[in-house]
Amino acid sequence: MRSNSPLLSLLMRRLLTAGALLLSPLAHAADGAPGTAPDAKPANEQVVTPELDRRDVQLTHIPSNDFEAGLFTGIYNTENFGANAVGGVRLGYHITEDIFVEAVYGQSKVSDTTFRDILPGGIFPTATIPLRYYDLSAGYNIFPGEIFLGRKYAKVAAFYVIAGLGITKFNDTSHQTVNGGAGLRVFLANWVSVQADFRDHLYSVDLLGTKRDTNNLEATVGATFFF
Image 1: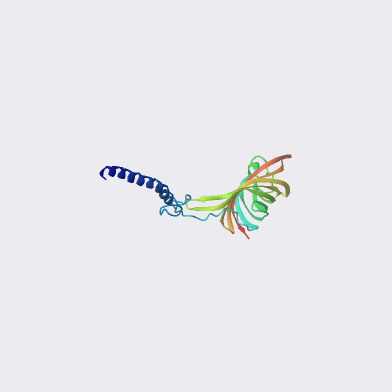
Image 2: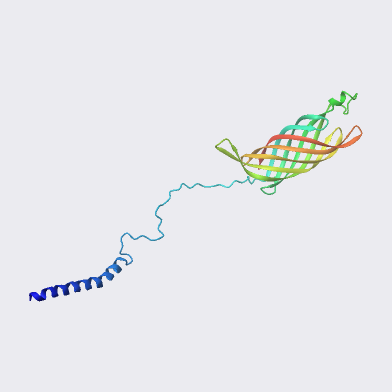
């Protein structure tokens, strides 16, 4: 019996090794089965959840009120006759957010004081006479956006170009006028704005028997109300 003990031990070890080899694939299959791993995570799971403070963004737009009425004041420089204060009213209608039409009435003065130094009696009946003009123009907002007042406040604004036709009257004479210019309008609220405007009024004047074209520059500021 002692001589068979080593042979029996060798046989038992081989049986155990064969059994272990047969059970090993089953153990691996059990480990890889779906739902058996407690720490398994979907491939598309987001590991870190960002915490973002979202804010509402409001698009800039010009108030949609169609009609406007306003007052303005400034300086009107009449070529050959000097610069004087000007004031007037404007009425407008906004066809679209960017296109508008405008009617303007303005009043200033002209003076021939410089001519009276060389011409006895001057050119006009008196040294100073009134000047009035009427214009009908069309404008276009080419740069609508915002303008910042300091670091904290922003207001809707529009830079516009404008041109039109009209009549300028002084010294009992009417002059057909072409006007053109540009301006900036800043909305303080949906119903009111302030604006700065620069225009050139072109018309012909018969000065001392010679007819010539003149450029008459105007710079104004004013307030406009929308309704």
